[in-house]
Amino acid sequence: MTQRHSELARTTLSVLFILALIAGSIWVLLPFIAAFVWAATIVIATWPLMRRVERRFGGRRGPAVLAMTLALLAIFILPIALAARAVLTHVDDVASIAGLLSGLQLPAAPAWLANVPFVGPKVAASWNAMANAGPEGLVEKLQPYLHGFGSWFAAHAGTVASLLVQFLITTVFAAVLYSGGEAWAAWVRGFARRLADERGDRIAVLAAQAIRGVALGVVVTALLQTALGGIGVMVAGVPFAAVLTAIMFLLCIAQLGPLLVLIAATAWVWMHSGAVAGALMLVYALVVGLMDNFVRPVLIKRGADLPLLLIFTGVVGGLVSLGLLGIFVGPVLLAVTYTLLNDWVAPAGSPPAPEQS
Image (tube, rainbow, N blue to C red; front, side):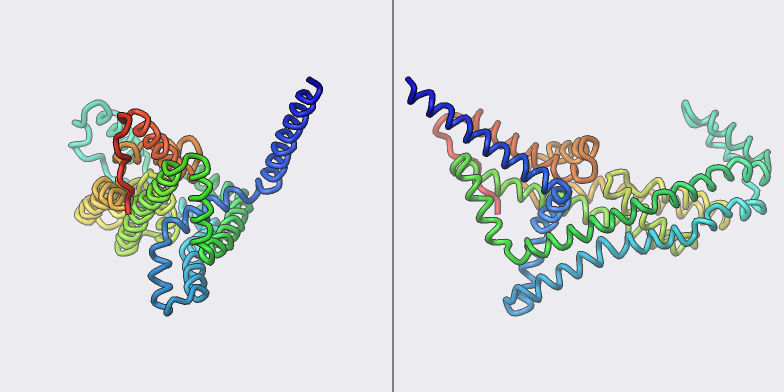
């Protein structure tokens, strides 16, 4: 009996000691966990591209890792730094836009607007009230918001700098993962096998496919919409085109789309270049803003053979629950849960779902 109590005490203390070590390690690594998860997501999503770059360099890993790291710096850090610099440089100009509005006369609301069900009459009445108030009334309404925007961004400049530091740490982690990708993948798959044998290995592969599919669908669609939206804004001559393009990219990544910016740009074109140019800009904005509904599903299905509804729910639910990182974490969690439930519901002795390439 005494020996049994001694074994129980030793086992309990061993478990408590291991839990304390895990908790201490998490506490030490906590500032870097988000950056590491981002780096792992980026490396998993771009690993096929890295292997192609490596083949171009004659199979040498070092130059390929350097090229991918420089590409990450150019894609993630440079645009944010340039956009932040542009906004900070033009904070006073944004606040002074109200002065430029003094020569503008808002036209009367179009006749069809009042016939729109539910909201049409109210929107038309507000539009006509602003038009009747003249340029002075428009300036008076916009001046507090423009000054508030300038003050807000100046106050949050430190947050932008902190974001750049996080992106730099993420890039460093990504370079480390690129250099030893096969060893990291083997460790993860070995750990998954220890947990659930072949099923665990298959789930690890499925999680990587889900990350790659979501990255392909979300990021490539965001880049495509941002590029087309930025071209349209620049061709139309809308002020602060670089800043608006950066905002469109952030909105696309956040699954809100570029329509908010493009509709505002359409209103500017309508007032400055006339109804014909405004109508053309509106059609272009609608095409660019709605194209993600057709492009994203095709790209996601190419990356991961999972139900589209499951991936879309994971993207939106992860974004709402976990922020920007949840766009990738959400689909992975749902994909793993979906696979486990399928294996559990499947009749005994039935073959597992085929592993995706």
